[in-house]
Image (cartoon, rainbow, N blue to C red; front, side, top):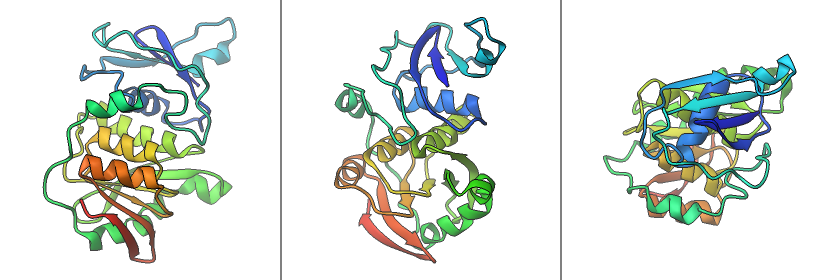
Length: 231
């Protein structure tokens, strides 16, 4: 699917169809492309002769208020987050450290089990990832699935953005796979207090969580987890 911002194509991502508007808006937010400007409209946009093209191009509109975006040099694959982006450090400098009271680790430990009932596509295929919002009481809402881990997170962030629920202060993000740098960065951009992953974090992910002042845990299974950054 191609994503455009104010008429400029910014990326083409390999995604699982569904919640495409959430994905496009979330991608633009997490990449820092919106620069704080509100999204006025998200729509399918046919730029070719084939009717099917309309369902594979999504346009995010800020009325031209967002800075002119720099398109990615490569296609975003289902396993790739910020790959091909040259401004990772620049994006990070635009984000303030996460503040507020830390979330209860006991509540966070049960998040993957509460995420699981929302993974209907995984039940059918066994081949997709999921992400969800962890509320302070440990309940999980706004579950999104995609073949790409980063896409699932973008879909969650985009849903919250379009609903006016960002930044996600006092909430956590739970993901079904490992915690990569890209996912920590997206969680930071979304304002999440914590990131909880079913698998391990990378060393760069832990370093980024430290920089963000974010709680980070991995191997969250069966009500237990390993704390990497206490936040």
